[in-house]
Image 1 (cartoon, rainbow, N blue to C red):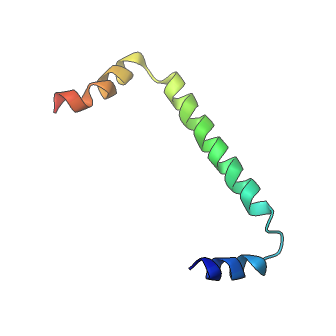
Image 2: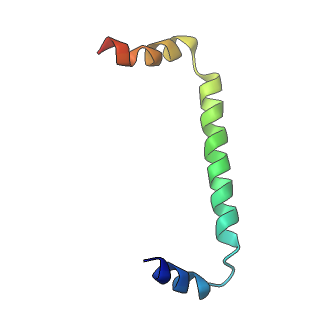
Length: 55
C-alpha cells in the first residue's frame, strides 16, 4: 500500500503544496474549536459536563 502511494506522489507536480494546505486546515479547525469553546455559555457547559452522570 505504501509503495503505491509513494509512486503516485513521486509523479505529482507541486507536491509541496499539500503539506502546507493540510497544516493550514488543521490549524484553522483547531482555532475554530478553541473559539467555539471560549464563547460557549456557562449553562451549556454545565449541561454537557453532567451528561455522562445523568444517564
